[in-house]
Length: 433
Image (cartoon, rainbow, N blue to C red; front, side, top):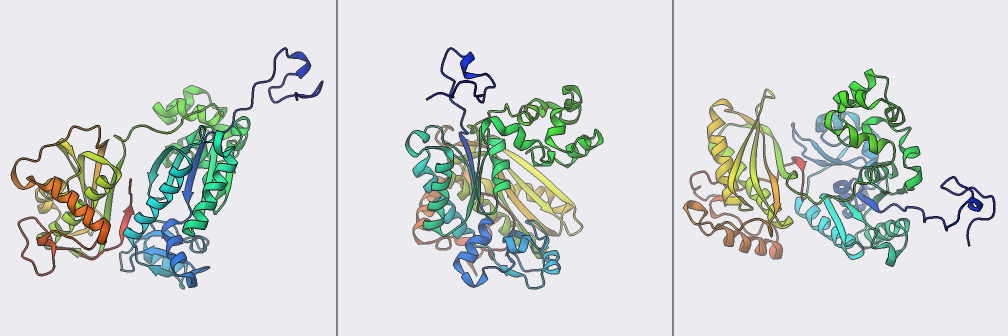
């Protein structure tokens, strides 16, 4: 039945003035699901006696960094990437749990499996969050509110973990909504009320509007998205540059950006900070190699190959070097990544004799199925592709620590540039496909 005579419809016209049935209201089609304090929630789930305590995941050493913080810890002002010494000062009763990377990866895969059971179009953007296009699924499971509730309930009942969901007509607003829904909540923004929802929020919630842009907008008297919407386009462009049109569409509620389809601009990698500076070049090469192998396995697990590998080094005085190498063919081979990052290290070692942080990152990603297959024909790379695939299968079956390079075993004589294993030290950044 249509609206009664004289009733004002969402479009603003009176039904009596229309000669045709009103168009159906646009429903939000993009959801953003984010696991709540993922690493810390996993640790509390597996050790229920930690519930209600300020729990952080990270390294306990002098240079340890918080990788994740429970909500009781966040209430004390503790945040990810905070030095552990600062976190201890904020919470003397802090509970520090070492990271279990393999466990988090396994649970992440289970979460994504649940999402894939309900929604066909899922874009995983990190170990603990994903965007979902639920428009096709609405025919089977109902409106986005019902789909979000279904996903959260399955994750809670099957994995014992909390999650939050935001929904909107665009991915950017869906992500903002999920952040506003935390912890353990859901917020679906109706299409017609998108601009109203955004108006009072600070401009800093917009992805890509960093501190410098925020300062530039504040100099113009703009602090909220509603105020940004009133800014002349020329003034907005002077502050935000090429992304100004997109931000303007977001602010006025007309943005309809859906799921991404490209992976070339994504990257993945790992970093580690050590309590004591590394000074032995052989030891540094060993640890860099372990990280290269970790990144390569992440690539293979996500079905990616990388064309660029980057080595990051930081000295005790804070000096940071970042050096990249572009490969002739994209790869997911740990041996090829190792060769490049070790070569980068050798070129920089004279200027960085002491290392407190090192990181390896792969970028310019492509889907392995669409990239040209590389023939590993020469030098030390011969046969490594098949060998690493076999190692992955063994690790998947028997555990990540079940198989290592022979030269990385304790007591083994290392081959040139090939390291023995190091302890699973606390990473600064944990990023997975």
